[in-house]
Length: 303
Image 1 (cartoon, rainbow, N blue to C red):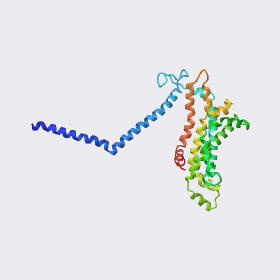
Image 2 (image 1 turned 30 degrees about the vertical axis):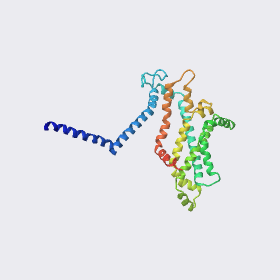
Image 3 (image 1 turned 45 degrees about the vertical axis):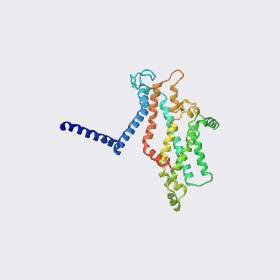
Image 4 (image 1 turned 90 degrees about the vertical axis):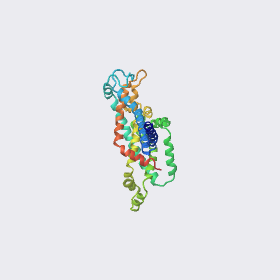
């Protein structure tokens, strides 16, 4: 009887010890942290898949051969070809890219130039209306640009700049400066004013203080503002479609719209245009990625 009871006792002890071990696994802070990190990674991977699936779909169907339809029985098209890209490069697509780059680059430079000077004035100088002026610019930026579409149209017509790149550059470069001025002012507020005072004691003027002290320190925000301005103008469609009438001056957004007509839509060619059209933005973004992140974290959250 004693020999038969021994295994039963050992089994009971083993069963009793198993419960605390399982409980200790989840009660350990290190194990809980591992589980939380695993769940966070799964959520991030799921988000990345959801975001990249449309991009992969567009890239794959930009190589689709046969008809221009997006219909396919599989995620990967049955036949792959470079005909869509050949059709783009042989047409007006290079001109559209050139027009978009011209508008985006020049407008971005103008926005950065005026935002830097105005931001320095609001941050370092004292003048009547300074406080309400910066608030007015912020409120003005909250209004959508489409509300002023008719006003832009009549204004450009009155100064004979309708259907010109100069008129669009002035609207994009100056019209988008309000938010840039606000961010630049906040960024400069984070720079210690002791540097200005020390330079002023040495006889430096406002311009010398700005150029030799402030300007080198705000370069990350300059890059951030330029990228924001460039991408916004590069992807613009509504204003350019109304304020431009000459097909030779169409930017990318308005040009690819010609692929869709009343009776037919060249979807695969449109996908190829989307792929090639995104390359300039990716190049600009990755070249200035480090400065962009630094500019956002330093300037945009300061107040």
